[in-house]
Image (cartoon, rainbow, N blue to C red; front, side, top):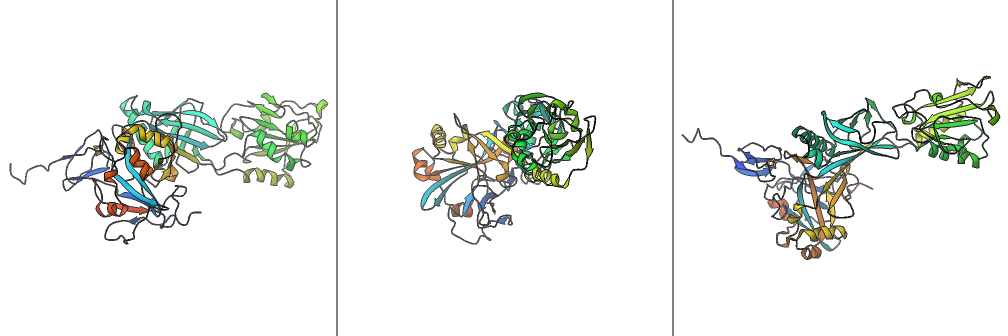
Length: 491
Ligand code: SF4
C-alpha cells in the first residue's frame, strides 16, 4: 500500500472510560476532545473568571499574543475547571493545580472536569398551579428522567436524574436523562411532561411555561398568609374577603387577623376541610385555575349563607387569588345569592398590592452530584483527607467558580445553582454521565498537610503561557452575577 492511500492513524482519548479512537481532525464521541495533528486536545478553552471584565462584558481570548501581560494575582482572576480536562482514570494529579495569593495568603486551587455518574438536578418551579401529583414520573423526550417531589412554598419541585435513571434503566432512558440534565445545567430550555399532569418548559433562571402558558408571578403567600398581610387594608372597604388557594384558603371574617381587627361575622360558609378559624384545606381539586385549584368560578367553593350569623342582602364580597391575577367582586341579592358587580376603585389598589408583592416566577436548577469518589485522587494521594478537609470547611468547593453547598454527612455531595456558572459549563460522556467543572480551593499549607500534589502546583501566568496536557487555549469571561467571584461592576 502506498503512503498516499494509507489511512490516517487514530489515537486514543483516555479522558473517560469510552476510550474513543479519534482520527486526525476529528472529535470524539462527546465532542469535547479532538485529534489535532496527532495530539488529543480539549476543544473548549480553559475558562478564567476575570473580575476586571465588567459584568456582561465580552469574552476575551486569553491567548498569548493578545494577553496584556498583566501579572495576574489570585484576587483578580480565578481559573475554573471549564475546559481544563479531566483526571480520568484518576490516579494522576488534576489537570491544573493553581497557586493563588489572596490578601497575602497562599492558596491552591485544584481544577478538574469531573465525570459524574451519580448526579442529577433539583428543579424549583415558581407556580401555584398543580403540575402533577407527588412521585409522578417526569419525562423528557418520552423517557422517564425523574419524578415530582414534595412541593414547597409557592413552588412545585422536580427531582431529575440520579444513578438509577442514568444507569439503572434502558440505554434510551440513560441517554435521555443525560441529555436533559446537560441541557438544564447549561441553562437551555427543556420540555418536561409529567404523567397525569402538565407539560412544562423549564430553563434555569427563566419563567416556567406551564401547558403553553407563561407563568409571570409567584404567589404572595398561601391564602391564610395573604389575609394576614392585607386584612387591615380591606377593613372598612368590603364586608368579606376570601383568598382562594389550593392549599390554605383564607376567610377574613373568621381568620385571626380579622378577629384582631374586630371584623364582623358574615355568615359565609366555605366548602372544604376547616383547619383552624378562617383557614380551609381542599376547597376544590388541584388544577390550573384560581390559586392552583381546578376552578374558574370561585363561587363554587361557597355554600349557602347563614342569616343567623350575619348574612344579609347587600353584603359585599371580594374573592381573589394568591397572585392577584384573578379577582371578583360580588353583592348578595335579596335571596342571599352573590351577584357579580364592578370592583370599587378603593379595592382596586388592594388587589394591585397583592400583585405588586408577588415576585417574578422563575425556574431554579440546582446541579447535585457526588464528588467524594475517585476524582479525589487528583487532589491528594490520601482521598479521605480531602473529604475531611471539605467537611471541616478548610477546603472550599466551587463549580465553574460558583459556590457549592456541601451536604453534611459522609462524602462530598455538592449542590450548585447552575445560573451562577458561566454558560455551557457542563458536558457529558456517553457512558452516560455528566461532566461538571469542579474546583477545590485550600490554603497552601493545608494542601501540603492533606497529601496534595504540591510538586505540580503552577502559577496562573505559567498556565496561561504553556497550557496543559490537553492544549493551551484559554479565555477570560466576566464572572456571572452571584458566582461568588463578582465582577468589578457587581454590587
Ligand atoms: S467520549 Fe469524549 S472524553 Fe470519552 S474518550 Fe471519547 S472523546 Fe474522550
